[in-house]
Length: 89
Ligand SMILES: [Zn+2]
Image: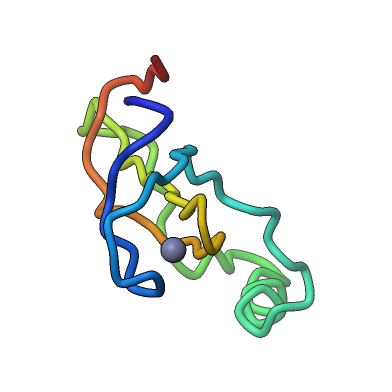
């Protein structure tokens, strides 16, 4: 993937230079509603609510790229695609 792309910016309403970075998942909040619910369900004997998946079939991972307009700093995401590995040129 290239570090800079010429893309359409909806805020500038024009084609501008965008910087490209890889999207990375942030740390999950411990006190989010889903995390609290899951923690409560996990309590006690034999209480794994959903089976844990061990054998992965897919050999690639869905990657998402973040693009940021160089003029107005408007950030958005590109459509995620399956890639074996990501290299920035
Ligand atoms: Zn812009």
